[in-house]
Length: 151
Image (tube, rainbow, N blue to C red; front, side, top):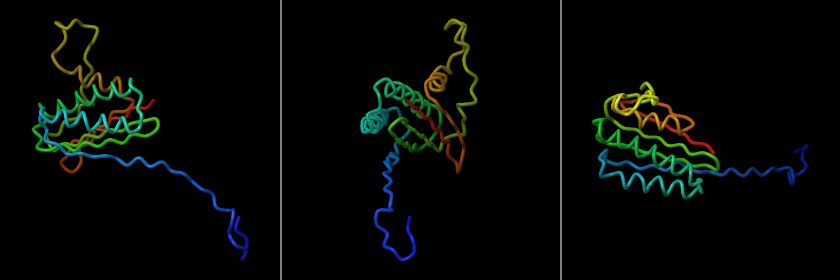
């Protein structure tokens, strides 16, 4: 504690903040960009030693989300962010395509056989089931999908 005119010496506490800045890339929303997108996430995850099981789940989610943007959004650009910490990863996809909230999709009835089920919807269902948080917003002309995985 600093008292009157005495010099401040051992009263300073040191705080060590581990900063993991968000990494970002922008790519064309085409399936040809998938290798670039996957390499970006692989590097981000490897830098923070994300457990292999978690990295595999994230790779499946990234593949599904980016494939859907490339195939269906009509976007001309996709920005992708990755922030990995000691016990979590946050991924953000922002595209300028048609507004679409995948979190509002009804979950498919997985108790039905493949022949009885409607086509589609399994990918985002897997993302919602394997990630801890999935959030969507439409802001400034962009679809923004944020997913988070903790371990």
